[in-house]
Length: 621
Image (cartoon, rainbow, N blue to C red; front, side):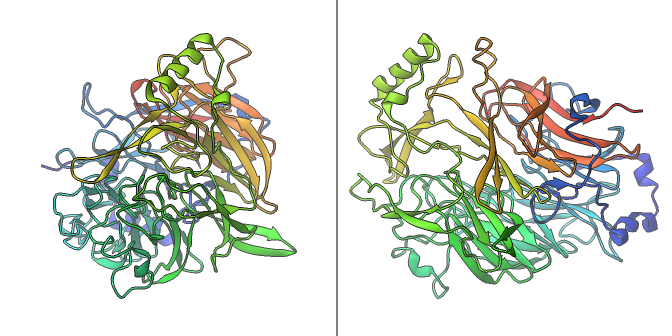
């Protein structure tokens, strides 16, 4: 039974008042979408917090998401809340969506998903409404339901699907495999009255639900359009799949955020790898639209152009970050651009109208596959600028020696599994394991970068840690893999020399690195050795005040940096790591707030058990 709790203030609001935000539109001081707006740049226009006063930030309030002690929850939460018209909308790891007063943290309403279903891991969408309908919260659940709530009351949206819910596991999307996994982990892009969704599907076995992108009418819940992620017979680029290898193929999905150029009506879809994502002997070809940024008409889903960043992906080097719209000032011209970054930490800056690289890309020879049944692409696209933003190879003489115990543990791992190093884009062999960089979690994590239009800087956090990987034939005839982080698990120290995590600013007008600093510290090391950088999840936001905020690191810190120089301005030790992207907004009391979800969890091996939305501000005058 679906449970609903409604705050008295929200329940008493008249319909006319509930329609006011849709008429006025969200304030510039709000945070109405995961990326702040449809362009995905995560840039706040607020200026109250500056490099000069950021060190004075303090906790303003905390909201604990657990509705009852001991309540069951997903292991961690990477969600980013929304803030519109002084109300925060937050999906929790306890199967609830809540609305909070953005200045005080007081709960206004809560909606409980049925059964064991959960809100998406990374956030939700907000539709501002129109002259006839009130604003709505739109999201896809982890079990494949599309849900719309009235933003003022939390009640299921009237006229939307069946009591506010649409089952999106249609026969077409399930590929004739009704028991395959299909759900949602990321928020939709909201464009006009459409909610445009990617999806989450399995990474193995190879056959499963389709990774198509679909748009739904936010008023009715009816399907508006579908873009086939794997072209069907008769569609352009179908011949990039050998034989019938396209049939029932899963993967090739937009599991992360997509972005929209609202002015031009173009949606940018960052597609993942086909299943299984470490072996392609059963689906030879370039395999479009896998690992491609695809531009489509946001109104109809019609194909416009694509750019493939990894050919025939056998490394899981998919587009794991949201595209970010920006402007490049080059040769006296202002070029509308889109930044696309994949797990190998290659940043492609493309003309967002034509898809052409702005700084050039070179098809570079890469090692062939040692697996007889596999045919690796002979080349891969490497941007001429900027340089790769994470480590891409490893040789045995680079084994770390920070402590004797760490070195011995890492050497024992190598000896036990007969590991060898690897070059960039070296395929995984069958007969032994390799140490591959970037590892399976990628250089950049799923949140990707933020863009400061005042400084012309694209700022992104990247990880430098490898994976040990080896292919293993399975009993069902498919290929599997054994893998793990290249780390001394006892100490948490990684097996190659630091830095293990970095924060980088790229000047998008030149393609050069403006600054680069280590992000995170290893507390277990003595003073003078702590500044190693640490793995991070979640991403940065940037503000017009010249401050970059980022949590994400497994050292449980929330930090502020000077966006112009990369200087660390402020650090707060959290009780649990915040594997999420923060937001910034203005409260009713006139203060600029910065908020982040901190739940710890197993994702980056930090302590589990946190359940807080932490909100910070400068002291009240």
